[in-house]
Length: 168
Image (tube, rainbow, N blue to C red; front, side):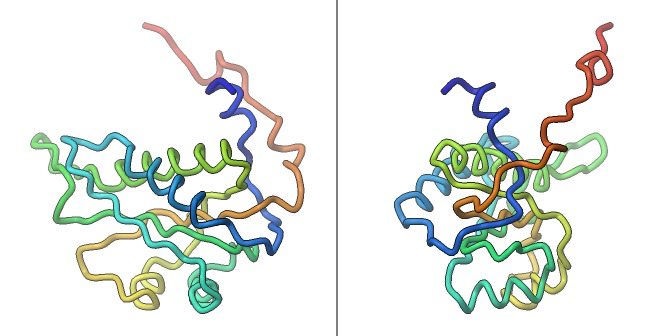
């Protein structure tokens, strides 16, 4: 499938089957996240795989938006590894981790695995519950698994290109 078809096919899944995702597919999704471009190629993304019953129970302490997915990735970045822009000291970590997360979601879609990007989580709870070191900052939780339902009608509503793009 071409990229635009793949991008249009992907939607936020909010109902998952209990079927576990095979390790081979988890590995492919992780490889896609590691192949993502990063500022200065510093590769600050750090990814925590949550797939055990204990891990999923711990995740549920950090967000109500887990949708009972059998698999989750906590996508983070290492504050000590990310590139810093000299003009204003803006670091690339959140952007680098986000690009990795998008790569992972698109690979999951290609494999027939549904996903949802969760930003509604308690960062401090993630840090404490998963014992993240001080230098690791969580950016997103990607919940994944086999979809138990299709996209909502809202998924198909798109703004006109002219509302989003301008030329100068």
